[in-house]
Image 1 (tube, one colour):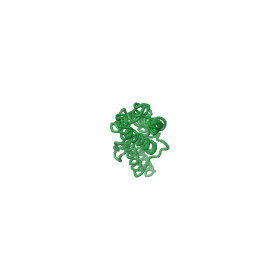
Image 2 (tube, helix red, strand yellow; image 1 turned 45 degrees about the vertical axis):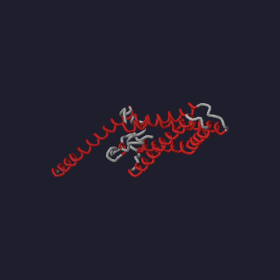
Image 3 (cartoon, one colour; image 1 turned 30 degrees about the vertical axis):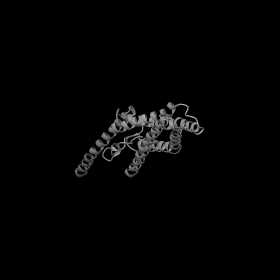
Image 4 (tube, helix red, strand yellow; image 1 turned 90 degrees about the vertical axis):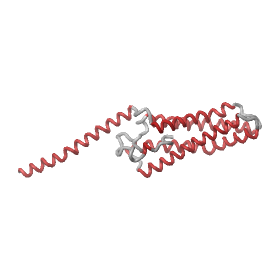
Length: 219
């Protein structure tokens, strides 16, 4: 979820025209590719967030009722979501966000909010694969056997933690806080020095050509 609610930073007017030195492979996504990747990323991120809200609603329904059919239906629905939707959306969000970071002037480790979101997205993806999904599968097996889930807290804590992380990432996507990292400031300074040197060379070139022409005419 690197840019799920804000496309401002990837627009034509907000993205610097030239990439600063230090970008991975010195390659930037072209505008059509950047826009297509951004659409995929926003759609996957929104789907992941909506899916987590659905899991939270189903978990709430399961732990607040004494009706076994309701519990069984809720937990089974959660199992379908985690088996078929959570991991594909998580991986799609992670990979599209990584591509946007490495393929644009934002970079992966140049801005603190991008760097923070990458590690949070990676952590929630790993947690979904190795904690959320196994926990829901275990609860579904328990309910299928005719028993109540062992712990209602375990059933609902996963969606709560995931939703909190996604909402936090949404907020920093919009606000883009904390400025640049140390590496980002260093790369920006190097980029500015290079631009100044290039401008000085370009401004000096016409004078050299005029001096050479004067010398030829004098000779």
